[in-house]
Image (cartoon, rainbow, N blue to C red; front, side, top):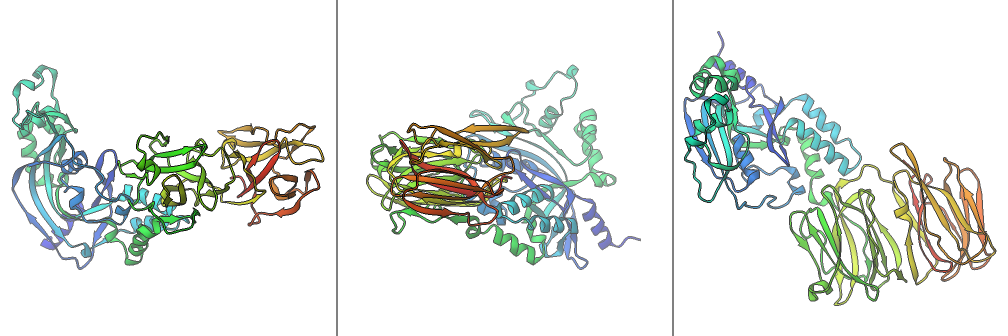
Length: 580
C-alpha cells in the first residue's frame, strides 16, 4: 500500500512543478523541457487537493507582462530579483497604451507549496553551471550561463496550482469589452477552429484587436477540437488523466540559482555584480574631476552617438542615445546651442562599439573615431589635421557604454571611456601602441583597410627609395574572409615624389621590430625586422634613433596610424596579437 507521503512525492515528481521557466526577449516566458530540481530526503511541503474552477481576468501593464499572465505567472516586477537583473536596470518595458487583458479558466486539482531549502538542483544542471563558469572572460561566462538558463530555466515555482486551463490574451479596442459576439464564429461547415472554440468557451469571441495564440494546458487538445469543451472538461477532470495536468498558476517563485550550492551562488552573484560588469579606461585631455559619468544611467546599450564638432574647434560635445530611450548628454556646447547641427553614428540591433580612437592634447579632445563589433569604422569627427596624440581605447573587445569627462562652453575637454564587460566580440586581438614624431597635419588611420581585423596582416609595403625623409609609404593588408584572401591597399602616406620600391612579406611572415630615426615633425628613416630575420630599411640618416619592440613576445606589427603631408611626420605603431 502506498503511503500518503510517497503518493505526494510521486505526484510532485510526475508533474512539471520541478521544471523551470526561461524567458525569451521576443516571445516571453516558456516552460523548459527538463526537470531542474529534486526533493531533499527530509523535505517538508504541502500538496492539497482542490476541485475549484475559476475564471480570472488579468489586466497586464504591457505586452511582456501579458505573456507572463498568459502562462499563469505573475508579472516580472512581482517576481524575486535575479542576479542578472543588473544587465537590464530599471523598468525595461514601459506601460502600454494598448488595453491588454488575459482571460483564463483555471481548474485547480493540486495546490503545491514548498520551500526553496527543500529543493536541490539535479547534477546535470550543476555541472552545466560549473562548465559555464570555467570561461576565461566575463563576457564568455555570461554568454555560457545564458545558454544554461535558456535550457534549464531562470525561475522555479514554489507555490503553484497544478491542473488545467484555457487562456486567451490580447488587446481590447477603445470601445470593446469582454462580452462575446456569436456572429464572429466560423461557419460550422468549415470545420473546427480551436482558437474560436476557446474564445467561445471563455465568452470573448470577436473581442481582441490583437492577440496571442490561445492556450490549452492539461488534458488532450484533440478531444477539445474534435468533441468540444464539455467532453474535454469531463476528460481532464478524471483523476486517471492526472499525468496531463500542468502547473497552470504560479503564486510564488524563486530564481533558479537558489537551487545551487552556496559556492556557485556566490560566484554568480559576483559575476553579475555591477562593479564586475563595468570597467573604465584611463582618461585623456584635461586632468580634473569628472563633470559627468558615463555609467550614471546603469548598464545600457548604445543606439546612437551624436557628435558636435568642427574643423575650427575639434570635438565640441557628445551625447549617447540608448536603446531604451535614455539619453546621456550633451553636456556643454550641444546643450547650450540646441540648434547647432551634429553628426550621428547609428548602431543597428546587435551592434556595439568595441574601440575608440581619440586624438587629444592636454587641454582638449581634438578628434574621434569609433569601431563597431562588425568592424565598421566611423568617419573622422573633429579636426582632420591636428596636433593631438592618438590613444586607442579598447578593453578585450567589450562594449562601450559611454564617456565620463568634462566639457567647457566650447569644447569636450576630457573623456574616459566606460565599458560593459558582459558584451564582447569573440575574435579579439590585444594591442599595444608606440608613437614617434610630433606634428600638426593630416591624420590617417589604417584600421579601415584591415578588412577582417581578426586575421589581417601586413603583406606588402611600398615606399620612396631615396636617401630622404620617409614618403610614398603605402601598406597592403591581407586577410581571409569566407575562405578567400582579400588584399586592401592604403592611400600613399607622404606625397613627395621619388622612385618607389616594394617589399613583400611571406604569408607566415610578420614584423616584430621597428627601428628608425625621427626629429620633431619628420620621420626620417624606418627599418623593419621580421620573425624570419629579414629586414627592410629606407629613408635618411638624420634625427634621433628609436628602437621599438612589442611589449609581449608573440605580438606583431598590426597596423599604423599617423600624420602625413608631403612626407610622413608622425607614426603610431599598433602591435597586436598574431592573426587568429
